[in-house]
Amino acid sequence: MVAVISSGLTNADELICPARGAALPPALIRAGPRAAEKFVEFFTAAIRNPNTRRAYHHASLKFFDWWGAVGLPLDQIRPVHVAGYIEALGREMSAPTVKQNLAAIRMLFDYLVVGQVVEINPAAAVRGLSYSAKKGKTPVLDEDEARTLLMSIDLTSIVGLRDRAVIGLMIYTFARVEALVAMNVEDYYPQGKRWWVRLHEKGGKLHEVPCHHKLEEFLDTYLDVAGHRQVRKSPLFRTVIGRTRRLSESRMTRGDVYQMVKRRAADAGIETAIGCHTFRATGITNYLLNAGTLEKAQALANHESARTTKLYDRRDDKLSLDEIERITI
Image 1: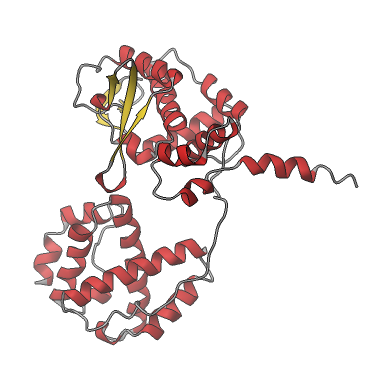
Image 2: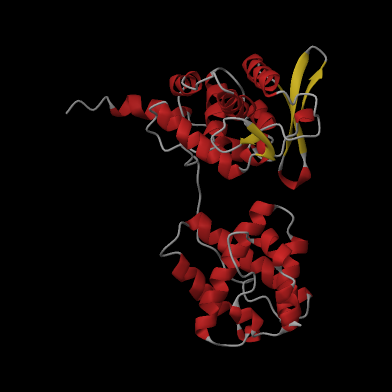
């Protein structure tokens, strides 16, 4: 059965972790074909979000690599072993990453218990590291930096028009990059006298946001020049064909957007180490600085809790800087 599963893992591998050659850790294969089958089932059937799948698969491989060195059978893993592993992780990883690793192990063993591979979940009783954050670590741009970045983009090519529209969408709608790259042309649409965007958020949820007038200008200019406005089911944001500076028919990926953001920030002379999530935090902070309310920011960002939105509120950063300059030594 292991051979059958292994030989048929090409697609499962891509679903689980495209960058990894083998989906099954050796320590799990030694536990028998049913354990291997349930492991694959967990990542291909039980987890639908590709980002969660990738992160949990990586965490599980790391755990079973460690467990393989221990050398005991799978059914002999106990809470004390998992606790020791989590303790060791805490010395090399941040608390949130350790908590994510523990969550992955706990969920996987829950699935193995239901699948009658093991009798108990050894991670169920293990507590994660204490962690509390009142402010997120995502770097943000101030208003001048964000404006400089947008104005620095060369708009004489379709690539520049696309990149301005991508960055503008993240700033003016607080969109996650995953939602942005999933958009089709039809997800930019008129409703009444305004244009709206439809974002494909986590868990298959659709989130509709009205367009800021600048974003509407960015998207209209981009689509008019790109020429695929009428192909409603096609990707809204497309990759570039080599060095031709012409768009392909392929959808941009998260990695494509990230590399573009890094390149544009360098061209604009921005030294802050920004990423795609920077624009979500930048948009929320700027909105709140201009008399927006936390409640409305939560709705626009599509957050379940206002506490999550608060992590993106970086208004106090400037206050802290102003106050520290009061020291006149």
